Length: 153
Ligand SMILES: O=C(CO)[C@H](O)COP(=O)(O)O
Image (cartoon, rainbow, N blue to C red; front, top):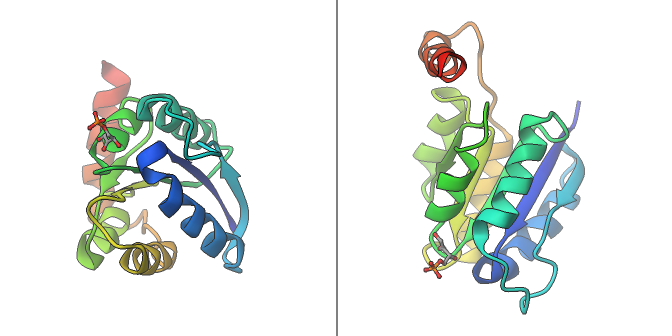
């Protein structure tokens, strides 16, 4: 079974997004890459416009996962977390990437191109794809609490 991955970046994240897209397209665990832009480094649309669109694709079920890149990863993370049903995290280390899936069932990983180098970013995405959330784990109830809150408000 393969996953569809939604991608987006602003101009600061464009180059790193291209590298991640290339890696994902070559990854046999990935069925499809949905690239929501920017498609050109001169496109200076603000990060929420790109990140919200990609996060909406995840929320709609068009993609199971998302990778969003801006300068720090922070703006993309804040934006994606505004979309109902989406759990996004910024992460630049292996342990956080792992726990974002196993503890938090985050569908969206955000990274900052001004924070992390391209080789580490690619390695983290590779690791990230290898993790899955166990709905029978003790963490599931904790994540369900967040979902419940979201549905109540
Ligand atoms: O990193 C960003 C947002 O978190 C973005 O790439 C740059 O944003 P800015 O510092 O507001 O221009």
